[in-house]
Length: 250
Image (cartoon, rainbow, N blue to C red; front, side, top):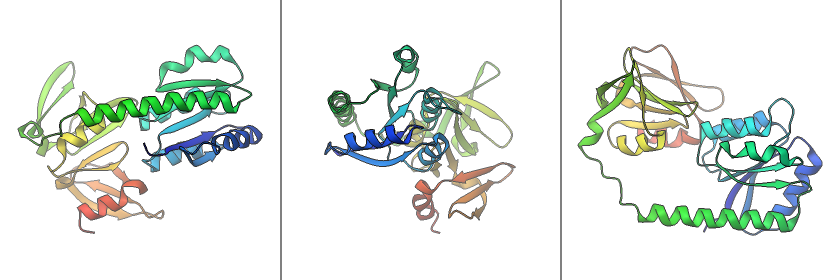
């Protein structure tokens, strides 16, 4: 099993430093980002796809750990959450997202070791499950998508769809003029539409490259995409930029 890619967030620097010190004693942990600022953490998660686990303090100003975890879940529901808290009264509310464990302060080496054992077991089980799945075949099913609008189901040609967006745990498909709600998450649709002119350009967006009108470079080495017949711009995040450029021969 590869090292777990971990991010840490606590509004108290001393506690953050202590957690860093403890986690650095485990060979299977790679701390890839840490901050006392929840917004910086959310921006990091938005732009990076290699996060496995987030250790987050529950009681923080501006955004609580529960709010941060909820937003992270919307960005990537696969990121596992470990809450760190001084108040066990929060624990019962912490399992509304992908929570693996909670640790009461003060954090100790022994308590972190139990959490990491739980994480390793979960990751191994997930890897075993993925290996047991048959490879996804690209077949006629990608030609049609079924979406819901006004309490009715509609069958949409994949070629007529412009983009698919994940928002607040829901997934929506957009055609030239209409919006439909889809079942399944964005990872599912990325797999189903692979090889059909669709590409993932952002954690929250899949686009049909056949409907791209223009691509505008941005100051931070990313792009904004304008689609034909649509006014909104679709972002290309840094973590998808190389794949995007390669797909479009840029």
